[in-house]
Length: 73
Image 1 (cartoon, rainbow, N blue to C red):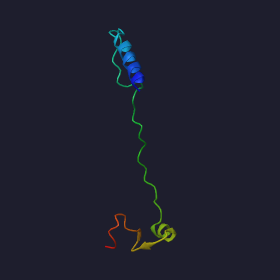
Image 2 (cartoon, helix red, strand yellow):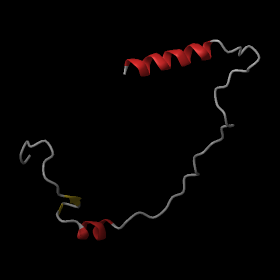
Image 3 (tube, rainbow, N blue to C red):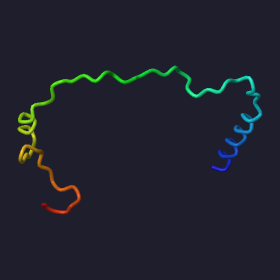
Image 4 (tube, helix red, strand yellow):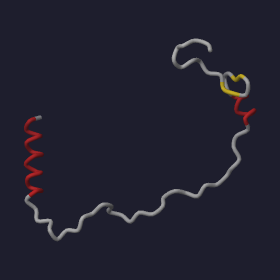
């Protein structure tokens, strides 16, 4: 591991020796644009149909075991 670290430090020293005075700073190599899609309202799933496929449902919600082991609330 020591030899790998030494090799990396040698490489960094080589980079420090480069003349970069004529190189413009670069923050982003590609022009940025809004990559988000437009919000489109679509119909959701039917609650009764989804709950009918669930292993357990109660009062219109999924019934799951307690996640913190605190027992029934």
